[in-house]
Length: 254
Image (cartoon, rainbow, N blue to C red; front, side):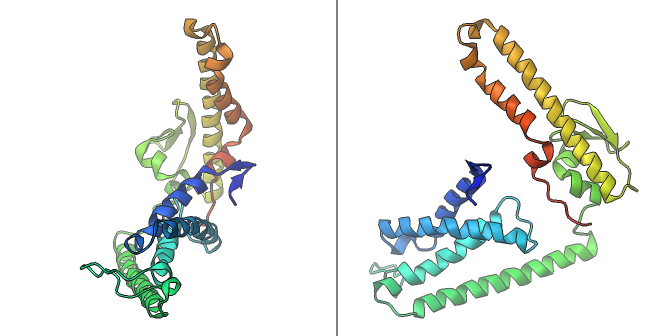
């Protein structure tokens, strides 16, 4: 889970760090520093389990927001009933002890009920809002936007799409193909993979040109292997990894 192709997955590391921050938010005022470390450390595996579980349930969470904020957030609320200590100050933010400090299950039960109430309210509000949008202006974009992504289709990130002609261009301005409204999903996916491959090929060419410029630069004549190693490393990655695996495209039915 923590490694991809033998290397630590940076997405898991970042989400684990964020999970630690989320996990401590609801209980930080009522615990010791050691307990904070324990709760934060347990937040990471909770989040990673949810992160892996959501795709199996058919839930699209590309940035891990649900895994981090829901997974670690639920654990954070439960941790109040386990690790919390009664607040003796005037604020009385917590009036009962958690299980590990001699309290009974009432605080944990109250936190569980709070989780259920928040979940129910959020689910109902989301259902009403999304249903209203779906029945009026529509919730889903067209198929070519789903396959190529809004970054390219709307914002020209990683290439350019000409809305008047349907032409798709790579980042370097090379024409890939022209797509039409009557194209089926298979044809659109084939065009998308061709666009990704040509973008990757252009990247290799640009990096190789950067290597040549780096080697010819007077500043790098003394230590070219050191000064130009970054360009060589990126060029090797671009050559070795296919466009499909680098972008990890998940194909869904329309």
